[in-house]
Length: 335
View 1 (cartoon, rainbow, N blue to C red):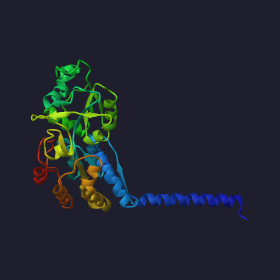
View 2 (spheres, one colour):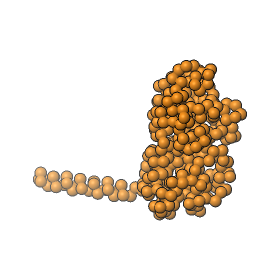
View 3 (cartoon, helix red, strand yellow):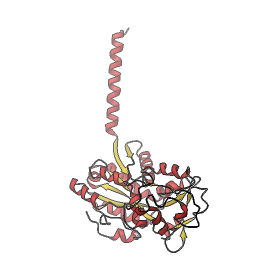
């Protein structure tokens, strides 16, 4: 007969053993840390989920969102293995990474059609010119352009409510560069968020709203939102796979990226396996989350760049509007 005391002792031993087993299991599970762009999040999350399934739980891929700028801050401090970015790394981020000794490999993973949206009940703004977008979003518009009829005289005299990414967002940087002519040059009197789902809800619940963010979030919410055709000088064009691929959705189509910590990739076989898995499956993953895949040759080139440990960026520390991806991939990167 086992005494109460012995039963208690067995209970303590069992608890300790379970704790040891749990700790060993946690230690055995490799972890890949990713942070950054909310725009890139859907495709990286899809890659993470599929890869984790393929490893049967041996690797955990953690994907967080703090915006492109917020992600690079963590990445350049060595806190993450991969940084999701909806625009290229900026000079100040290059300098921060260099100071910390963080080398990186720049890899495009898909095309995004940066989408301008209104409420579905908006019957007047089926299209906008780039000049009108600038009129709405430039710094000089703050507290001045507040009604729709100030944008175009034929529009109704109703309030214009704006929604867009915050200043840490790569989408914010790219949009202001493409539309206003200078990155980060924007009015500040709008509802801003690094979380695109917050912006979706804002526009969906505001009949006079207008905003912009990545195509994947629009595609997932077409029943709540209405895309606006963008006239870059050759007539209005709506975002779609076709208009991104043929270059007519201009200037708001762009490549999106992941940046890999080169030292971490050299030290962690699971990280190398994940990046190779990501690039090899990116066309399927991109379509799955409503982005546009890159040409097949671009993924082959990018995989080669990763396997050759090609350090640096081909953008020189700033976003570029309208550059052809094949030309970018052929450049010599800078670090």
